[in-house]
View 1 (cartoon, one colour):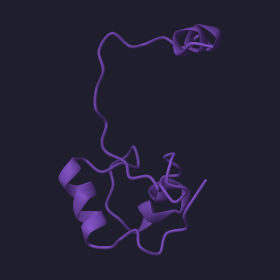
View 2 (cartoon, rainbow, N blue to C red):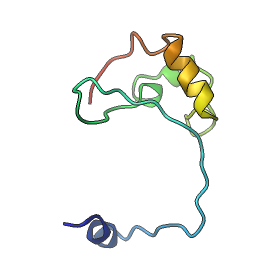
View 3 (cartoon, rainbow, N blue to C red):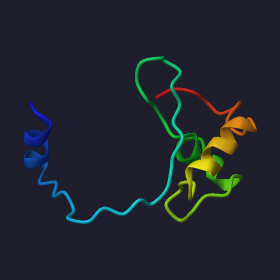
View 4 (cartoon, rainbow, N blue to C red):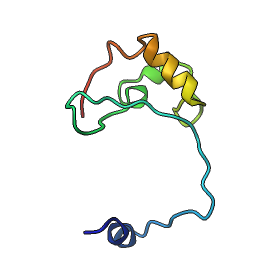
Amino acid sequence: MESDDFSKTLGVVIPAHKTLKGFDVVSFSMGYLPECSPLSCNGLAAIIKVNKHCLFDNFDEAKAALDNGLFNNAEPGP
């Protein structure tokens, strides 16, 4: 099934205007697919500054969190 067909089946309407709400970080422990967000799935948003959408406001914040090891002990995987 093509992605357009899938969207039509579910009644998904692509918005005319898109707004970036923030940046997420996902685990990649299997090596071939993006998996869970440690911010929401592991509850790290409770101790890491995120916006109301449970996302980083900008790429630099997300990168800094990775560089500073804030996700090192997060549970990996789907």
